[in-house]
Length: 85
Image (cartoon, rainbow, N blue to C red):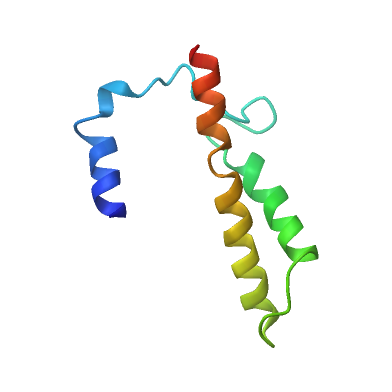
């Protein structure tokens, strides 16, 4: 599924991409690194706030990081839709 979604974004729907609206986080971090605006805070939160599901802390932090990142991953898209109005 992921490969087909990436192919669709790169080929048939490429003309729908609005580069002028896609600048999430670039006021804080260098151009092209807007994802760091979400990834770094989410990682810090995952390190300090994670459940003890396994005896391996790396697995607990990795799982928590993935869950938190998935929760905030739509923020840039929502911001782009809001700017488009």
